Image (cartoon, rainbow, N blue to C red; front, side):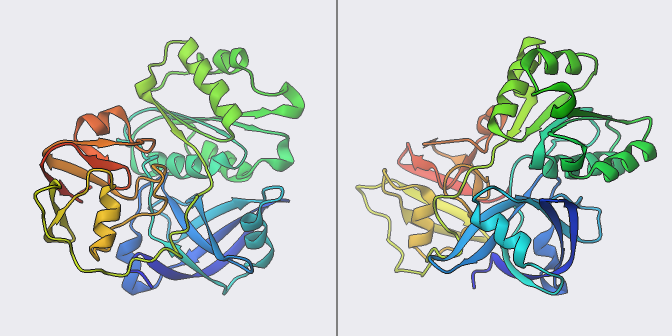
Length: 345
């Protein structure tokens, strides 16, 4: 088992709605430090499959780092194998294989005022951010949450309890489709402009996030203040990927050279110009952190300390991250003859 794969025990299964559950997890004492996480991050879960051996799915942590236990909340997806398997088969005492927490959908500060927009199961990372800002920061929180009806609203009770406990800092606005129709650009803009905030976090179906993003732009909210969490199926399975060590390739004159600082050690390799850095590391037996290899999760984030690189995709990073030299190992190619990269994020 990879150093990044761990077995956790399901402590409790909480029915949130007719089609969603929260899995409360126990982590063994010896690996607890590996599960330190930030609000808004996710776990990647291995689900057994009779056809492929397993499938991997990412589920946001709905718990907050100050909660006593980790928790993920899962909503059934029509025709979705993984979500239905978890909802139907996991009981208290079950064991799950998971990767360590990942993701970049994280507030830069807990003291800034935030607008948190969610629809459906998009509430899971939003709940984590809201609880953390309220309990550990000084920022004000506005939650705008769209659902079909009251019965389908995940965390309806918990949000009401938070609103009562933090009456001076939390406002929750429920948009119920049965009462108001589908969220529209004009309707969302009218709702949003009544509040003041510094940063915006969006999570939910693509249609909702598109409408919300256009609404925010229409009232003058700069794009750099808006963060989106997008759920896409992983094309590769990190639990099934082989990371067997091979003989390191010594630097050669016809390839750039990369020196990588990772886990307190430095390694120097030849870096073929058309091969992403993560592939070079894995080929040379380095157990680098990664989940999706698709620019989604941000797990393989690292810093370019010397030289130049370019990214094929950069979905998990902000423009500010890129300007600071942050890059994704799974998407990074060399642009200079010598590069120094550190996994220090």
